[in-house]
Structures are given as structure tokens and as C-alpha cells.
Image (tube, helix red, strand yellow):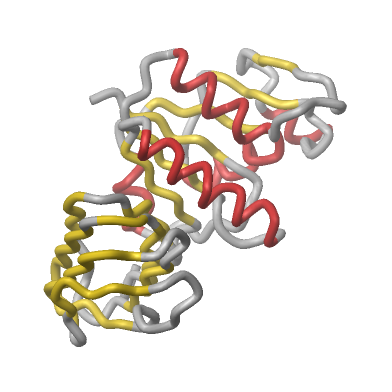
Length: 210
């Protein structure tokens, strides 16, 4: 599988779990997300953006990295353009680092982008290191989580036939409406298995001892 890591401009905590998730992947930085490259010991193969968030010091430090420059007045974020560049290079899996935290509009846009990518068959993980988001679509999802990790399922499109195993409060073929808090603040007992018959949303995870 062709796995790409996209460095975005949100918050990043360089945990061992995060380092393992990006290990061996190809790297593309989106504008100011390049600042996470040194933190994680990564060298991007491409730097995408309008470069309005990249400091002169950052630009000088990575002057050797090829650039895909875009105007400031554009229809898409630097992050989405970086994702498009990865897909054009054959990406089948994506890790969006720095997708969480920061501005609410950016975070929500990244979550919805993750769902869209998952619908296209692109396995997508959004992470800040100590917080992860996994798109949830009809089918099965298995998450390898440390015991006592907190997790919440957000029913952005409602859930039908939702089953959760490997958690403190399991469910079996439950219906969860849009806006319900029924599936917030659960605890993983180890690997978590989720089955969904209809609807969509995201699983937010706070890995214990990330």
C-alpha cells in the first residue's frame, strides 16, 4: 500500500505512537506544516502551498525541497492541495498530521475531508499525536488501542445498526441520531471493533500513554 503522510499546520505532540504511524511513509508538507518535519525527523519530498504561513527561517532550512506553489487567492486550503498531490502520486493510505487542534473551522474541514477520502477508498487517519480521528462508514472498523484509551463516536450523519466491542460500554445494533451524545466518552479495553450498517461519522480517540 502506498502510504503518505501530510504535514498540516495544526497542533502536533511527537508521541511514539505517532512516530510509528508515519514511519516508512512518503512525506508531503502543506505550507506551515513543514515545521513538524524536524520535530518528527522527517524529510518531505514535496512542499505545497502559498507559503504565507512559512517563516523565512523555515523556508531557508528546507530550501532543497521541491515546491508546488499556489496563489494566496485560491479555492482550496494548502492541506487539501497537498492531499491532491499525494493522490496524484498514487496514495492509497493517508496520515494527516496536524489535522486536529487549532482553528475549529480547519479541524472540522479536515474531519469532513477524511470522511470524503474514506468514501473514495483511501484509508485516512487524522492525528495530532495525542488525539486521533478515524472516519467511520458502513462496514467494519478495527482500532488497535492501548487499554483505557478514551474514545467517542460522533454521529455526523447518524448511526444505524451500530455495534461496538472491546469497550467498557458496548453496543449492539444501536441507532444513534445526529447530535446525540450517547456514544461519547467510552473506554477501550484493548483492540476495539466497530460495525456500522448505515450512516457515517468519526471516531475520536485519545490514546492512553500515547
